[in-house]
Length: 149
Image (cartoon, rainbow, N blue to C red; front, side, top):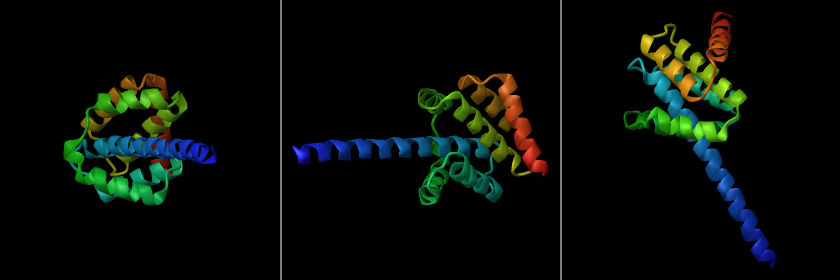
């Protein structure tokens, strides 16, 4: 009986770990997608992705390093926006989705210029994540304020 309970708890913990890994992979993939929209991912964007995943989404720094490395290698095999957003809509609350949009603005702004394709991507993502234009605009403003300071 004790072994049975241990197995149940072990299975539950491993499924939580798998879920956490999927969250990290999707967040990272989406952030790499945003960074690569202008055709180039530079070091400032990668650093911003890493900091966002660690500080905003409370991910482990070692896991973040591995997932970023994998996502950069596979950036040409990226998934559709619907793939990312359908999962995020199921798993994230509105506040976390707004934090994601804000983090994406931070990444896009980190190289010093906003390409039309980058702003278009974030606008489309905001719509797919059911984030209002006002909330998306406020997220951009907060990111711009941080960039200036």
